[in-house]
Image (cartoon, rainbow, N blue to C red; front, side, top):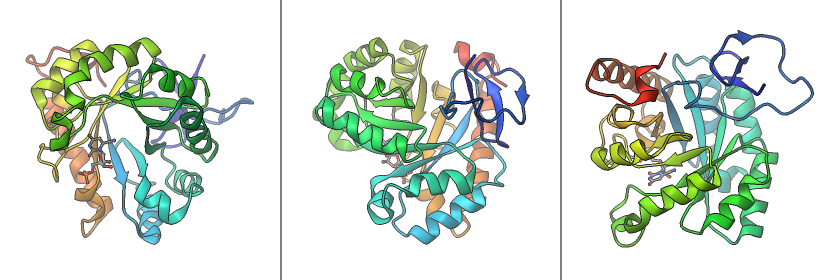
Length: 271
Ligand code: 6CN
């Protein structure tokens, strides 16, 4: 049986969302993969893209007691200021799972080395670009050290030039490789809904909320598992409160929207 962290309180849960049990933290092996879809959780990924290391650490500390289901995504701007060791530190003081968002896009050997460095530094998951090809995704997956999340579409205007033309093909390819998660923008809800209907065995994380135009809850209502929010949280006067408020709003919309109209399997059975 595989176990993963319940970020609510350092408990272990079995992968199928079963009972939690305290005190069995290690059992002799690394247990740190995030299992969003399979636990049928809906949650908020807080993007730590700030460059001020003290603010990052202070928000991480506050997030330990935040009300809601949270994951922290560490981006390159913060990593470049603080170094790779920031991941273990943030993970430890927040008690939350950490995604390394290096948007890895290199040859298999280098991509694998970047991912290994991130996992060894405490990341539970890494984000990799799908456009570089299946061999890269396989190389990262083969590390066996954590979740692999593939980018198949992006929120910015320029993704219309090239990337969006091949999103469907990339989704098929990344599912064949067996990635754990997929990044799909919240900014085009119909497209998200369509892609979500193609994805069964991977969780969907969705950026573009608030600052980039999508409303809180848009992604969850269209098949995503986690919404990603950065600036609307870390530039707020009280970032922890902003995270809690956004999380609450997201869950409120999801609860009211899933009565009837939303028929995705993983939504109807959610907890
Ligand atoms: O909420 P914000 O717009 O401040 O930040 C969005 C976050 C950033 O960390 C950005 O790197 O989501 C990430 N993101 C990703 C893919 C994409 O297409 N668009 C994004 O904004 C990812 N991962």
